[in-house]
Image (cartoon, rainbow, N blue to C red; front, top):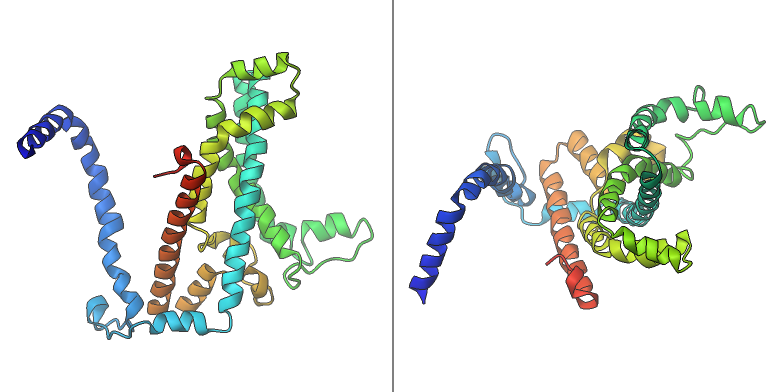
Length: 310
């Protein structure tokens, strides 16, 4: 039996060796870039000393993890990270599906060149908006919103960088503006694989646009939605560092609503030079994300086995 398996394996290697050869550079890169650095996880259990190096620094067990979770800000940064990500996952996928469905309808009725312009325009606008949002739009004295919208209408100007109540909405808006386009393309690609005959048959039966969307589009997108949901759950303890660090302009008064695990670790690293605590936070995020992916996949498998990732 073993000899038969060996012969079969040898035949497969001989037949597909060009593909394995093409795959080799990618595997080498993956091993060097993703697996070799994993030896640095030992930093999470050390009090790192530059003179002693990674493997010679004194071991302190789980002290770095205790420092991370015993701080008074532990609840705030965990709450912000989880709640923002839940909102981002739900609204992000919802908006991406809506926009993708709109573009899919547009594609059927306009020429290819106009359609490509519609696809690229949001990216060009988003670059400008995200780049200037912090100063040009929200600044208290010179901001566009205060000078050109609120004051001409007779409203008092708002000090956005001092008041926390506006920032959950601001951060959510900026995140959606920045990411919906990418997710939209994924859903749009999935929609292109739906048989147009289904829509035509439904239209002949009297189904309206909303009914076709609910009865045909959404069920057809189910595997894509589940896959993106599981992948997003795996990163629920991570945050968009650029979003939470750059847009609030590092304003200390906004920390209760803008501080996340990633930004907290960054501040700890730059101010306290605590590499061990930063490594512990990253290790914790990775382990929790891995566990959540497994649990999410198990739940999906129980409900719909064919749509599970593995």
